[in-house]
Length: 463
Image (cartoon, rainbow, N blue to C red; front, top):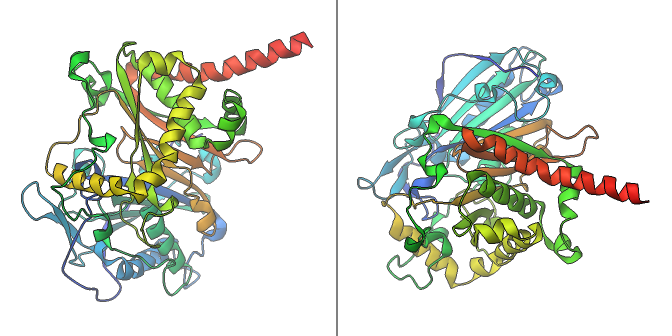
């Protein structure tokens, strides 16, 4: 495995291919949250046999074809070519549809697809436009999209996208990238056509809150001690590290053996892995047995019936149910109990999406606008991206890499480029922890599979 190093050219602005509407568009109450003020990233890999990707001439480069496709996509997704601004200092965000464009850069790298191996890929940040650092949280007045196309030594290439989370969620970002790929391949219009309609997730009467959605309840019980004891909040960023754990079919099957038959049938792989990671994270961080911890699940509302979200909607359409347990309950009870707790929260999602709770949640989010982000003591946040099969939607895509943007947010994604030796797909889960406890966390995760191996060995010995 080699570390990727990219040599970037000069960035340039790409504007819509044709004249587009101007004016301001308000964001929804789900879009317009402080925690969404960052750029999220995604990388797609293509082999050399896709080197004619949208090229018009034999000597045309994929980067030129992709740049033309981005310009065409911006005709349909014209708010993406605008800029965010605040109507009042610290107030509501709007998209000013100026048509100023997005930033695009071409790069070359010595690495080959065959060198990458399993994710995570060393130096993968080199395949993304450099919007890292504290300035990545400043989204006001900046381009809403950064694109980098990197030619690899093997003849393949990578497309890296960094997109402002205030205007798209993960599914919306994938929809835009698919539009670029389709247009580069010669299609005349994107499929699906984009839908703005942010008013469907905007509270009509922000002052009337009839239901306190759990995500907005205080995360700390004032009676359970000081709020400064969480290592996740006390550790400086330079002492934090990210790590990625790959779970193949064997590991997933091993974990499923801990569940009774009925729970195994109705529980998703996302819930199973989220339960494992939440439990191991809690142990590694050393919380007291009497303290309460929470897991916040970031779910895509489009996947559930009765949500009222039209096809083609590319804004934030997420709901975040929260579950709570004491450390003693979480770590002392069987894994099946944690899985059942999380699965019940997911199963109730349709109820939340169809009833008054959804509207009340929107009112609460509107009321919180402009206030500091919610406190996150002892809260594990994990996003379900397992349903975003980019390689199946974009012809020729040989793999994808979700890089996130908020490192504190754990992602559960399909590792389509990093399948196991049999070619079967794996699931990758990221985690962001203090460096001092990361090894302990890894040991806790590994212990579950060592336990299964030991049990199999004992069974064989008894036969």
